[in-house]
Image (cartoon, rainbow, N blue to C red):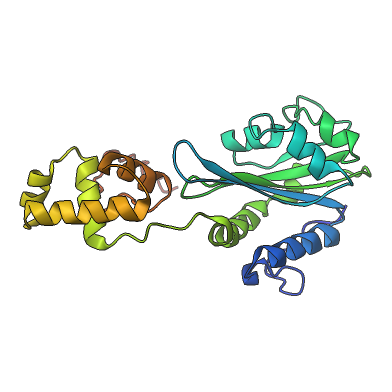
Length: 254
């Protein structure tokens, strides 16, 4: 079986230049073909909040598979998605896989549609980004996990391109609005935030109300939660403190 084409080969791999979902779909189909696979499925979930998550599927699959997946498979029952949430190493399935070599994946539905074997790359990223990119085919050929050592690099490229294309719009909070929300997340009142930032309590409430409106939320606490989940609010590197330091002893010279 042919090894995967490295992303640096621009003539084969142009995912980094994709400007819209169709361009991305076309390039994934090209990647699928040149690496001796017939089908692919890119499954992405992006959070809008604790109660709402967007699901995006880009597929080149056997006839009727997409309809079957939409009607019969929820994201909670997709075996690849469930495993992708728990690990980062590639997943593979084939008809003669031995359980002691790789934990078994219940891929019966995939096999019924001719996707006898394949490999899936779990995807993880910021802003609640999770999913997988799967390549599959109906014919059998040796699949060795060591053939895919560079798939982690492929995952980084997919994430960098897919997140801007499919992620929900950010709230576009100002620096001061983020500061006020940060201190709300620390349990501070408007008066306490005013003392910390050296502004009036009225100004603090003004910034918080703006943040609530921009985020489409009902109160400051929902606004904090939503913007943390979507990645608008991130931890401050200025407040990172060293808590663990494990140093190996220097090797003795011979």
